[in-house]
Length: 341
Image 1 (cartoon, rainbow, N blue to C red):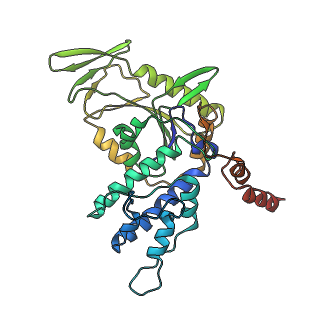
Image 2: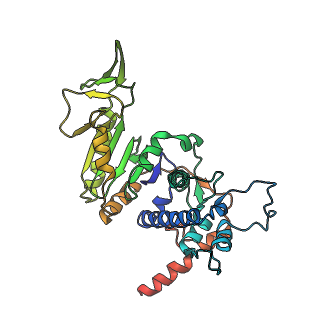
Image 3: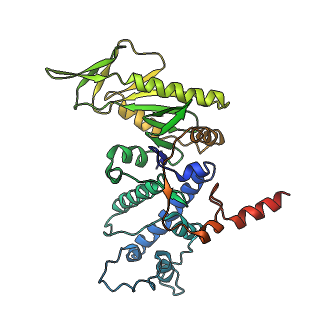
């Protein structure tokens, strides 16, 4: 599952420490799936079922946490129960990262379980892409039903880092780009061309293109304009900071055809004829997250814009527990500083 590291101008957990959170997300996702899958296989999935008011749940103030219930249910000494040790990282994730893994329906098959899990991870990613431990942004609730966003996150590998319509400020100019995929070996600037099913887009170097559907023809804004701007902005960022990742421009239409006689050499067109092949190639990549990839992300975050406000639950005691810059506890940071002396 690709990682959503930036969403519009929302504040993101990743921009606090782009070197830490990609790896942490991958570990948490794998560990959480192992626990969830084990509970389902051993018919103990009820500990993940959400309890509603009036169903016999403990009163407010005495309600045990989800992982307290898991420990009580799964970690038993009798011979008939599988013993599952809850990793400390997951307990930390529930406390600090709001990793809610409760369901209202119980899956009948493993495939159902996978879909439920991916939907929960998707919701979790929206939290990370719109908040930090201290601040949060006002998120558009429609994003939870955004099929386009779900498609790119749920169908690609964990090591792909995704920016959805990020806002950048370069030389006092604020610009919203379209879609960015930061891969281990390249950066993809992508624009989706949405049209009627089986329609044909006629490309040119003019300000407008044409979309033909049967006998109907309508004008659409030339998508190369915004795509070329994105490619130039991202390429300049990488070059000026010595990042050697190539930047590619992709124009994508999943259900339509694109006919562009004067296609530029640095533009890759993916339409209905080539989409499936491109899609399978991209999702089958096995390269892990690379340091140069994270360096590129750090550079991108140096130019992004974020609009947020303090969390209501943030207080003085919390501020003393966390280093706001990198999300680590002050105790951990101080001790690591001493070890370096």
